[in-house]
Image 1 (cartoon, helix red, strand yellow):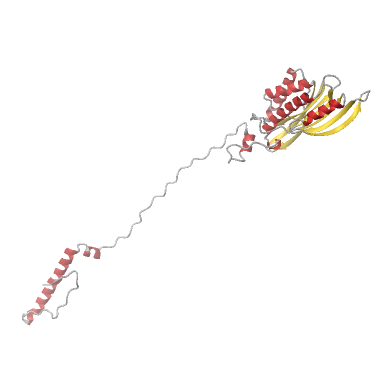
Image 2 (image 1 turned 90 degrees about the horizontal axis):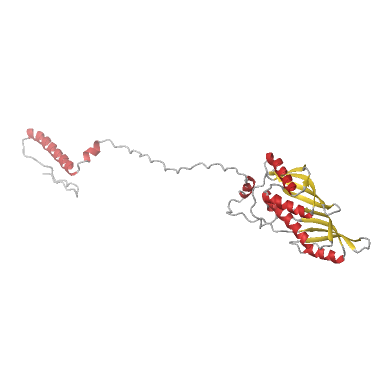
Length: 310
């Protein structure tokens, strides 16, 4: 009997097995017993380790690479191109600062976009004419008055005496943000009591309190329509506005600035009404300058530099 201990190596017997058989038969018997022993060992190993011989002779399987599906990428939709609107010029300016939910209020006239500049021209012109009228004493008259937005003006006139001239000068100095520089101051009239005077001045009306204006950039095809509407407004007020003539064209950022000159005979009150009605009618035209010149009676000649952004 062959003892197999799984925990220890097999002990080698001190002496080989010897069978008392005749010499002629000992060799076959020895071979037979050896084969039986080998068979017994194989049987025991098979019973204890069923997969031993299978793994020994089986062809080793090659590892199969399992394909890993790619990580899904979220679908992105292409952005639609921005729609071009009538406020394209103002939107372009605002788009320069997309990080601000609300653009900062402009600090000066130069910071305004074209539509805001026209809005300010109406506001400043109307307010200055009203302020000048309110501070002028009854015995002070004008020979010339010129206003150039945003706030520069020139006035040349005649006061009945020094007191009226002083009152008028003090009134000019009281205007919002006023800076006044006296020009001429000479005696006039038969008795020499009257004073002929002139002042160069400027006002600084606030620009951050303006309402949001409509888009006032004009398509080139609509220019004549705008000019015709302006003449219609003037005619409704009894003002005969002469046909405007083109003075200059210049590039102003993304748009062109075009200036026409027109003139009319009207009173001081009529020019105020004209500006108010033109603004009320949503005109897209502004003013680069207007000059009022005394005609010798209650009427005056108004010369206007009319502005359009195209």
